[in-house]
Each structure stands twice: as structure tokens, then as C-alpha cells.
Length: 154
Image 1 (cartoon, one colour):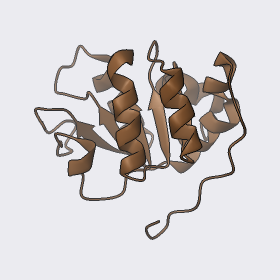
Image 2 (cartoon, one colour):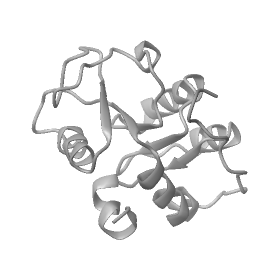
Image 3 (cartoon, rainbow, N blue to C red):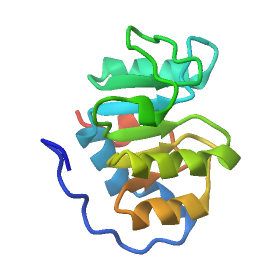
């Protein structure tokens, strides 16, 4: 682990859908993750990723656009892939279809992210099992901009 990084908490076994959105995990990610790689973020203002990334920035989080076009978004340089990011990422926020999301979760494990967040309607139970078994905290089928008012830091 790099400087300032802590070991993830011990994981408990979770198999039902409600565990994908455990309130203690949501609270911890929103409070403790400072650098968010937003996979699928581009300059398209009509996409949910654009607004959620702006919201996270307004809450003091550093956002990192990850998109094949590697565009600069919200003043932050973009990267074509998670592996291209030259610094530590705390949370990987995933705005891709469910059938593509599992690969992104595996890449998040590969870059030693602390958490993975699958957006609304993005689920992959097998990816959840692999990711949490690797020690990462994971939330699926939720949006941090929605959860912030309920569970985010004040």
C-alpha cells in the first residue's frame, strides 16, 4: 500500500442484493475516498457521469475522467484506462453497462483501489464477489449523488 493508504477492513460474507448497498460501506466510501476515477466520464453534458462527477467535485473530491478518448473534463485531465492513471485512486466509479462493469472492477483490483462503486442499474454479482474477496469495498446499483444527502459526510 502507498503512503496514506490503510488496509481495508475485514470483509463479511454477503450474498443478497441488499448487501450491495450496505449503508456502512456507503458512508465509508463517501467519507474516506478522496480520489474518484469516473469510468465512462466524457465531455457529454447529457450523460449522468458528467453531473455526478461535478457533484463529487463540489463535495471536495478529486475526480479523474476515464474514457477511451481521454478527454479533459471539469478541469481534470482524462486517461484512456485505469492502468494509465499515474497516482493512487481511492474509488472507481463505474458508468458502463453491467456486461462491461465486471472487467472494470477487476481492473480496480489491479490498480489497488480501495473501493468500487457501480452506478444505478449496474450490477454484476460475480464481480462483487471477486472484488470484495480481494479486500475492496463495493457498492452496486446506487448513485453517490443520491446517497450523499442520506449517508454522506456533513
